[in-house]
Length: 495
Image (cartoon, rainbow, N blue to C red):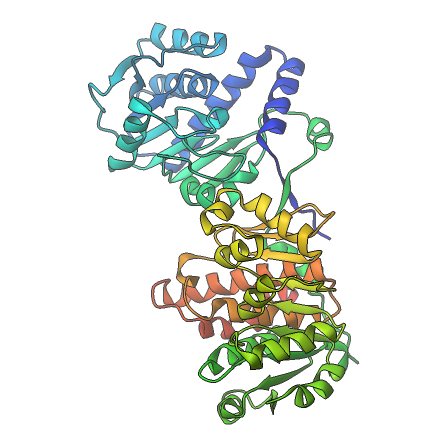
């Protein structure tokens, strides 16, 4: 399999900084110069017309990186101003040295809130990973001023105010156009508020020896488009439909038939060999009209469902299921069937009310459903997405897909995976139903639960991006993904 990109926690990032500094000729200051100079090269490349550059520096080493960048810009004959708070003069030896070099070269320094110099680009070198609490007082006001001014913001290492360990914004936080991470990718910048505030994420590994990285345990792994090919290989010429999975989709109580229709088509479009649907009689005609390739059955009782369960390889249940007697009865039978499961929507809400062993299951909650499964608020889930996903996986002994910006895949005993594909246009009804079908379709194609959840969430996000590229994000429909899924589900052909 193509190697997944490692994501690291803040403790590992600090340790690598110290280890690299100890090995590098010139020590920690040489590493700071590499960071500042590398950041200047990115700024010069991405904003070549920028003449006025404001560098907001904090008192620590992140501010030191900013002073090094400011000196580079000054030497390139740009109009540079370093802006800092009155009590944010450099406090570390490294930052003091970088500041001295900048001032000695004729660099200008200004104080906030006395002024905020007009700029073509603003560089955020205020806090980096050194802050894990809400900014207060003038620091909060400065961050708000950065966000209020019109120029693009370029953050060094971490947007100030973001907790890179949790991916949260406990208070005011810089909204960057781009963020250049140093040495390692921070796992907290790839999900939740961290992903929202960081903008485009870049990496400068500096001159850190590869052996140090190999000796450092990552916190998570990042999945990207090229990883799909590792799971979705070309089929044999003599493949038959039975080998590609018999998926049973259960749901669509009265008035909720659209959900299970989308799950059904998504399973087919992602390559399932046979898809059967158990739904209310009222939805049979509409489903057959929309998708005649599906085998649709009216199910009004448990006895109607039993033969369908026996024939299935994978069961997807929850979309449109409802929480009434019909949905409860079907869920109970599905859980007792002993088949691999993909659970979403009302199936999750029902098991949250009556916890029980799930067996081989993939749970696909959004943060609200995750909160109900854990007995906490949505805000608490979002405040620690990695922790919530891991706790869900351990508590339910299942694979978990925690949806949202920076979707997380968790399984007890596995390194969590992060998926940053997808876009805000996908925040609309039915997208979760499509995801359920995609994952179930891949699970039926002999992928294990962790692989099916990973590949399915990645494929779903990529399809959303492809659909948005065609139509735009606003007004995107869940069904718009169907045209994109087959091409993306055959990455060797698409490539």
